[in-house]
Length: 195
Image 1 (cartoon, rainbow, N blue to C red):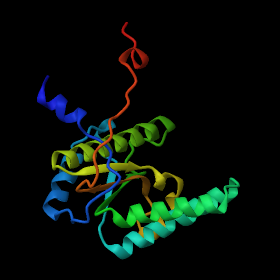
Image 2 (image 1 turned 90 degrees about the horizontal axis):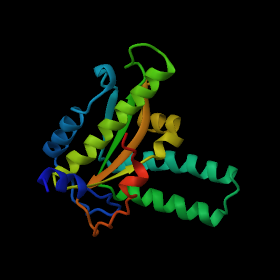
Image 3 (image 1 turned 90 degrees about the vertical axis):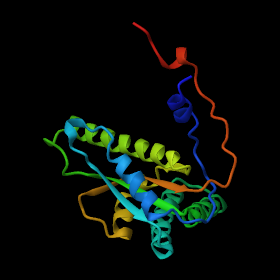
């Protein structure tokens, strides 16, 4: 098998990280590679927010978990369940050596139509995948987190982001401190049609 395929298939999500910092030169290489992702009409709508500072992580964790708590209370979740999820979420944010918040610049569209917006979101997501693969190429683990989608305004306010930067996802990146789990995959006949 082609070694590039082996490499791509070996990427796994990491949820536990060693406390070692990610060097600025490594971050720059990862972001540069992520920026080579394809985008509809070459609009390049992705924007990256690099978060390493503990106080900023705390601010982000509070914003996200305050919104999580409110949503869970509205859904009628038990207080013990809410506290468990809040504590786990805050711990994961604080323990991640590097957090990269992936945003979409809502002004980076050719024309303002629903189809262009979807293409813009898809393009941003491609940059997120490219970012994970670039981190993997550096020997780092990473994990895609969708929490900012549920708390876009809170995330933007906590980090003082431009109004046009719409939070889409965040990625925890660092030296993995766990054995990667085997990934259960659907079979090709389940996910493909040959015509």
